[in-house]
Image (cartoon, rainbow, N blue to C red; front, side, top):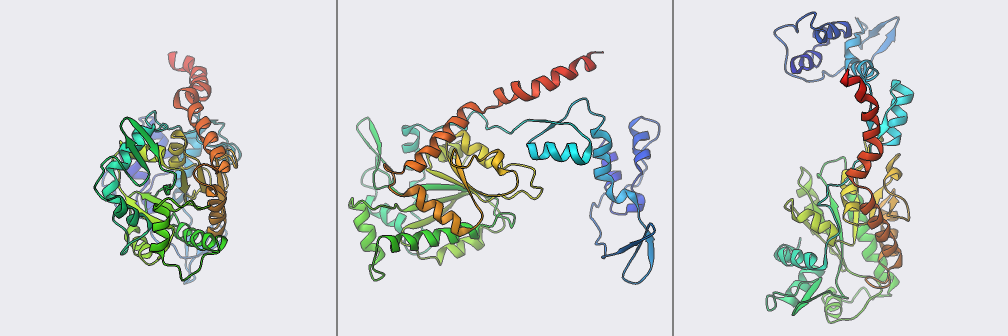
Length: 392
């Protein structure tokens, strides 16, 4: 089968097989040709005008249009219709397959693995203790998070910026920063600039809402916060997880932000600690936009599994997963995201009813939507219907 795939993906369209030739190979009537070209690159094709079955290039010469140039979709359409059953991951994809491919598919939504679950208070405290040293390293000379780390120091190993343990009792601090998590592959597919702009807007709008004097130094503000003064809006700590090519570029931009109430940290967590971080955070942010508009971000599925509400970039089918004002919110710009942050975190941690309502919705979805239930509801009936065919 791999040689058949290589045969169909050759760069030279002339060397690609016709559909009938592939079918004959699959039926064991002929062999795949030898001397395949394994350099699977797509040559750049100039803009062309199609005239009577020919394409006219920029020089006026004509070359035949080869159907094998679109062999991938043709194979899928041909063999997809031959399946005894089909599954897809969204209703939008289900509609696309029915309308344009003639394939009737059942929807089987992705679900989080069992280890993506709500995090206990003890687990949160232990995680904050483990990542304490990493959080103390700012992008720049100092920020609101690193200042708090200095205030805590290394005197008491049972205290973190977010939690404390006294004897056997663990509690979350009232003046703790709100933790916002976003996972990314640091590629151009996700516009991380939206998040940075929203952070700047949050910082400036909070200062304006609280009528703060621009001359007030950030260290004065930080000391008031860590001395126990309550503010209507909390400090925000954005923890960005993942690796990718644009990470360093955005880290340089973060260094230049100079914000009073917002800090950023980038991390690469172990497979054990990542679910714990999601369960310990207060909000998730998803910048994923689907190139096809037909799939859903798995990172949001995992966040819901941990009971974490999400603010996500809006696109065509995202509302199949993010239920607005039930388990999350959608945004289309940095300004909209900043507005949502202000609305959700007003009165944090005790008086933020909108955030609590979204968390309840995320917890409900995470507890009810698991692979076992999704499989029983949507996959098992399809397989059961097809099983007599396989037993003959």
